Image (cartoon, rainbow, N blue to C red; front, side):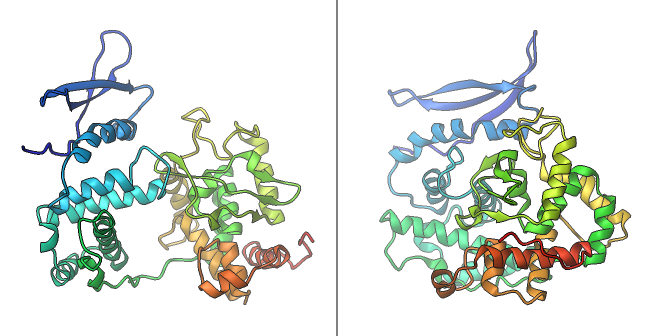
Length: 392
């Protein structure tokens, strides 16, 4: 009996005589008699889901459920495309926050769709060889080495999924022997203290507050946008990073280490208090950087903040470097290193998962040490005279 194919379904906009047009998702579903009947469901109105991208995110659960029966009722996958279908359903479902973060899932899905499936989708699992994959990766010269390495890694993860399910032997992962360098071809940009101060003077109030937090804590932009006012303890000069906002969705932080409390310098505290005093959404339960267009229900979109405010301000300040919000994180890390801070202090301030296993297990940076290191970096950025701002 022929197996049903993985279906993407159809999403389209349906007008209404009265009221707003609606997004409709249509798919086929087995009826219990061996036949597949057409089903459809209204996802939402254009007022609720403004763009097709919003509607696509809303139908992820429906699409996953539509394919669950198809995949689980079939036998062991024989081709790479069938294995990928099973892996996506079991390991990176978009309808749950379990496992990998939403951003990681989107990257995996993108690499599988754009690169792996077009080249390897029809291959039988045991016909994929290490040398052939290695030669293929070399042809992707338009991609940076780290991107090629990510493609290799996701392929390896998919084959390990087959081993875990017993469809391949323990040593039948052909990607395990694929060599692929992940070395950067370009060093990440950082700002000098003078460049930072020039940019800081031009940024609008909201973006200035964002920049202060990013530059004085090293937080990722997704983590800053995931902050609510109740997460910030102004008296203790610290904040809890409990969630992140990426790709239009609220999710967990990148790792458990990322959720550790973060110390705040006095300049960051003053900047946040100033922004809270003038922003439209200042209640404890509000997002610290709420979107006005979404009436405070979601944080601001990071790409818009970068392209509409940060980069134009950098250009006006005479900064020719390619910068984004992550530039502040690189700058902060560079300042900590240049100040000669203890490597474990730097690791915990940056909230990286690892330096080495030994240091993670046996070494811990105390909060006063982290505050001193942070203050010295902020001194450089804001040209502040060294002073005692450490809370013992």
